[in-house]
Image 1: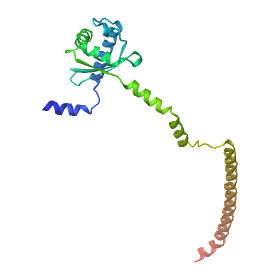
Image 2 (image 1 turned 90 degrees about the horizontal axis):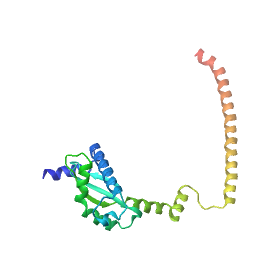
Image 3 (image 1 turned 30 degrees about the horizontal axis):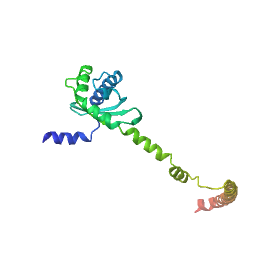
Image 4 (image 1 turned 45 degrees about the vertical axis):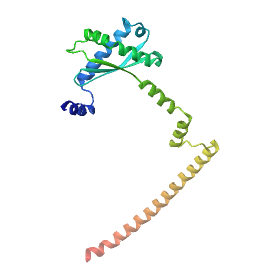
Length: 192
């Protein structure tokens, strides 16, 4: 019962530094094995397999190996061959990586490349490009309309300047009136 609680608590936590380090060591060891291709299984040696990631459990007893085949084809056949050779690969990894216990290996096809390609295809679709142009304010206008809008903006720029000049004149007149009041009001205030 306690192991269920512990696994539920660890499920939301990011992997520890040790898990990441051991996972990377396992990935390098498996990649080296597949690079050499020293397998007794002819079907497994016929695949070009890339190990993309290894996720290891907190107790380092189980490792999930994510793999991809060259070109992304034959993932199911490669998965079957890898599951068949899991015990052999575990023994080879135990000789290459210095661990107290070699983890049990389970293999899963890495679909992150397919997902990234799918997202890239969506982002480059004409519908998304049209929506992005609307968000950026690049609505479909003719060039002539754009020229007219520039003229309108220039006219608008002139009118605020004229208003500022009027305000400056009014401010100068108000300041002069206050100065006159101060000069005339000083004698009255002091005397009272």
